[in-house]
Amino acid sequence: MIFAIVTLAGMLAISGCKKKETYTVTFNANGGTGTMAAQTFTEGEAQALTRNAFTYDGYTFTGWNTVQGGSGASYTDGQTITATADMTLYAQWEIITYTVTFESNGGTGDMPAQTFNAGESQSIATNVFTRDNYWFVGWNTTADGTGTS
Image (cartoon, rainbow, N blue to C red):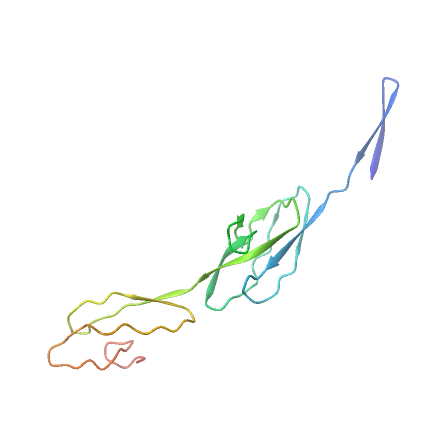
């Protein structure tokens, strides 16, 4: 501590300075994998959060939250903050989705697109297209059938 002695009209006063507090921000993968070191913040000093290093197969990282389920204070990746206490930040994840569209390839009819979640098995919709004088034999990723069946 640093002390200063000041005299005021014959009175003696002592004032002091305290050392700034440090706070620890801990990062939790919240279902993801990997490691991240805790980050130290100094009281009253703004600092950027360490960028996310966690991964989660089939999911996209969407930011940090002070509550595991995402109902607390939210922070973006690398956001500059001024910590006021120790805290844990939980990675927030959003499942990756894919959309499959169906083309009639010369047939007629209409089929809505189908959404798939990464890593989850799901049946492809039953064909409703028709084409005179043709049998439906299956789906393929290219119109000429040379893609993936």
